[in-house]
Structures are given as C-alpha cells and as structure tokens.
Image 1 (cartoon, rainbow, N blue to C red):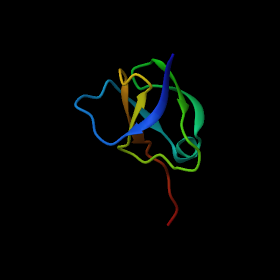
Image 2 (cartoon, rainbow, N blue to C red):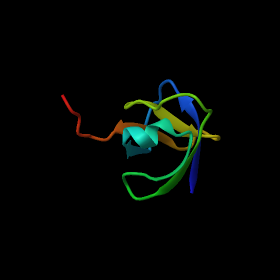
Image 3 (cartoon, rainbow, N blue to C red):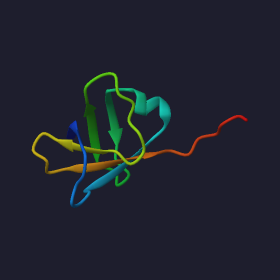
Length: 76
C-alpha cells in the first residue's frame, strides 16, 4: 500500500490520481483506492482541506498522486 504523507507544490510527472468527495477531502487520515485500483493511505497533517488539483507524495517521492474533486450534487 502507498502511504501519502506530504503535499507537493509541483511535480514533473504524476504516477496516479484519486477522486474524492468533499467528505473524504476533509479527513487527514484515510484509506483510499486510487483511480487505477491501487490501495493508498492518507497520513497528512491535520487542519487542511484537500482541493482538486493538489499533489500528494509518499516519503520517498516515488509516488506522486493528484487529487481530483468528485462531481457532487449541490442545491441552489
């Protein structure tokens, strides 16, 4: 399992994506399935909402994952 522990400002290449709804993007500790089916865990610092387009990396920097915001229904 890939353990994503830090945010990255920019990256040359992305090794995966994960699509999360707003309830999941609020959490700092979470087990997720990447869009390609691999398992990953989020172990991030608390108090920061993940936004679509953010990049996450593991401790070694081998895996760079882009966060995608899932489409959700909104009321107007």
